[in-house]
Image (cartoon, rainbow, N blue to C red; front, side, top):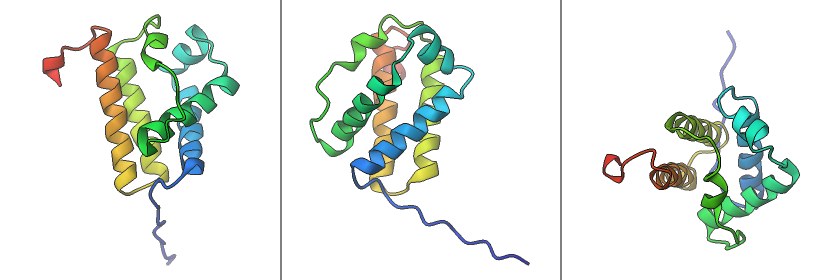
Length: 132
């Protein structure tokens, strides 16, 4: 009989953790049948440019680093997005966080991702603010 050992995850603690989260998340996005066509087909994301922006964005969101100096919403206005895209984005984000981390900051970043997705959907007219 083999002994199963529990893998102890730790919380998100630093910029390297943000980088690991973002890189793993976008690996999942690039393999996803619903999201890949938006990112790589329609938007034609330049990953060498986009990933460092996302490191800064999530560092700012979680740690208050103020490294991100942009406005994320306008870039999303031209994309052919539906509620299903946002639902899948949140699912993959939460799955990625849960794969890699556990703890208070891991829970916080999942909540912040959900909030961001809800705000974007409201601003795009995909959901009513009363539905939240």
